[in-house]
Length: 367
Image (cartoon, rainbow, N blue to C red; front, side):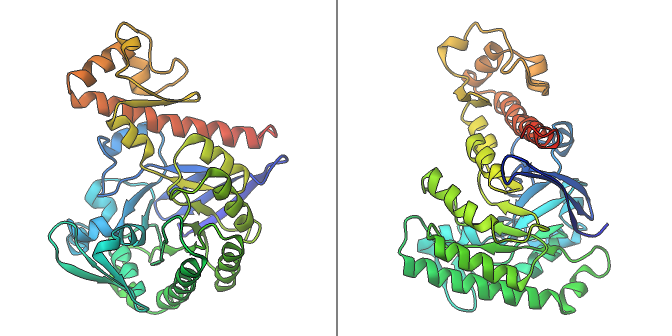
């Protein structure tokens, strides 16, 4: 199965839409949320449990996997899917966000980014070509080009410099995948991953519009929208997203990168975003918080000491079907890792159920 995006229905009330992404490892129904498997594992979760909560695609991180265990070892294992025993789609990011978050440990040039490993202090150099080779070695279904993500706030001059560099690297990346080099890496065992482009421009609307226009002109099967959810107010994020989705091709999926709170996701869907990823549900679980439509609540609160009801009576996850808040609270205070595990199951399933309902509402005309 090759990559394809099928637009099934558009909302009558907003720019929301239901679609379907076809990849070599299966189908993803959109709008979709991807659990984060940074190092080839979603924290505390097994692949079997990811299947049980109905996750259809996960995101893994090129920067972290490159440093440990290394892309060559993953290649020897037969690719990332086999290495981690996950038979559904995988999207890998370029590592650009992680590199650029290490401001004191990296140097940006026109050719790429030199950075110092946070693990052992060894210096590495990522070029647009290098990150594609690494992701191809992983056998990802979807890969991202090297881009430059600026901090918020930043000057317009800084945002424009990053935009110019990101667009040029995107064009170089598309040209590179058209050659034979990546095919030799796969050795015919799996297809070259599908390459998305990434829109940048910080919170400057004219730069966002320019970036979207330039990337659409280059042409990609899908588009990431990066550099948002980095500290800017929600209304600014939505304004940038609204401008971008008016420009990006309708026939391509749009991945709003790194957005993971329910109000942000629901608002972004109405503005035309299709795919989301974030560490929020797993990170909150490790700190004792569970998610419901009312927001996040911490299981350690005294009010749950004798609460023998489930986290969410409407939730069909393993945690809610079998355990009470009182029990999970006890586990958390006893420092039992099972508490984090159960909260993670629930939080991830919460997002799967939420997007199931969003898709159903759009399809029946109420969303």
